Image (cartoon, rainbow, N blue to C red; front, side):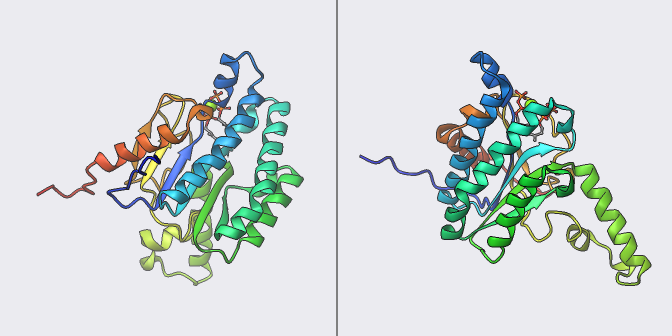
Length: 242
Ligand code: IPE
Ligand code: IPE
Ligand code: MG
């Protein structure tokens, strides 16, 4: 008999994930770190499918940080190749299911092929509106905030924006996450309890879950456990509970 699916008891529109632990997962198996990235890409596909199944509308994935350039060239090269494969093998499904691809970060430094594949995915899925797959590649939150500040300052200078009208809502439209809903839940795998330059502005009122599971081991069971944990949280937004 088919097991009944857990039903969310709280709205969860936007899930953000720091996939971490690919390297350690591989090392534990005496395999090269890149083997972990390959396996990790399979989980990305699975977790994204689960997001759609559980009614989550936006899945943000931290896949490569501005600091990750400090890694060995070979590792970076293969990681980007796996990400290209991921887009190539999922693009038709994205079209079929109405998934829109969005990118956060600076695309200009990405390998040419990765940039092409990413742009193609963004352009092809531009008008889709059922789900968003939001990938952070060469992303750093401090850089994103600084870019937004500079752009808003330019608009003030050019008299497109009145300084008195700058509020949170307007500022958010200058971020790479412009027009995406608030992040409800942020999950980081692998037991690290830090943000590593991820969504410093956007996570203001998100719930956080730090799980010791390495990303390649993060499957449906772990995902549903996180959803249950999220549903048990009391989101007060500064108010008090009656
Ligand atoms: C996360 O896994 C993937 C990326 C940062 C690209 P790691 O590669 O950071 O794996 P660990 O943390 O070294 O185990
Ligand atoms: C954060 O993971 C970046 C991504 C998941 C893309 P890292 O593994 O790079 O973070 P640190 O070095 O442990 O902080
Ligand atoms: Mg790591």
